[in-house]
Length: 314
Image 1 (cartoon, helix red, strand yellow):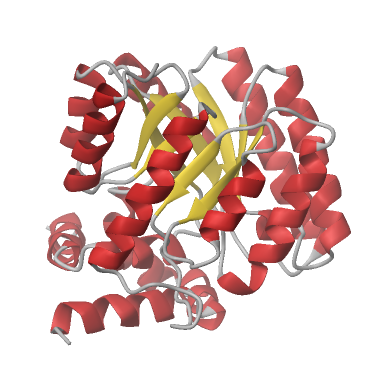
Image 2 (cartoon, rainbow, N blue to C red):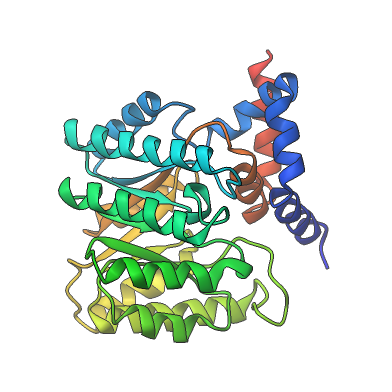
């Protein structure tokens, strides 16, 4: 086992530790010292900052999906505040005619407090998004929440056609989840999966995962369902283009999505190849989990994080 692999697993573990997140938020010197490393990967700490970055990305030919960062909200009033902030995002997108959608964690808007609260708040946001002509994408979370997230998504799809769902290729269950999701409206976003998971539930992050991702991706393409291929993996991107070309598939319902600040040149290449592209752009102050997961995905980013932190003090 390499040191880089051990570092990545340690970062994923830290990312899920709510006491660490709380400590960072409650200690301004620590928060400010880590902040420059996070700014590389997010759309700022305020909605206004995020809107300006969205405009820039739109001008570069990329659509955007905006997420007000937060997860595991354990207070109903905070969940309501988060829901209101997402309503503000929807309003900003509509008023400024941005090429954007919203993405959210159901646990951020109340699912952990009470599943029915999470569902009601999701309905509020889905209705507002629908009225504005926008898509709402539900993100996936840790494995202990997968069943509940998929259940709420299914309920939402009984009322709305603009609600998408994220599926994680590293889980053994995902092929069956994909077949079920294909029976519902709304875009399907396919990711590798960033959370810690027991070996009994998830594949290791190696060739086996890449093969699973490819199989799921090809199933999505063949279905003709609206989908977002969310990966930075160059071999998977190459496989996707080859499959689309060989099968002479229409690309109107296919988009490629990548994270802000991570291999932007690859997204530009996909755009220049004629595909619709999208940037996942989170904003807010709860960037601890997000930063840890970005560093875990590519441990050498730790070096860049150190440079960002030190450079901000120069």
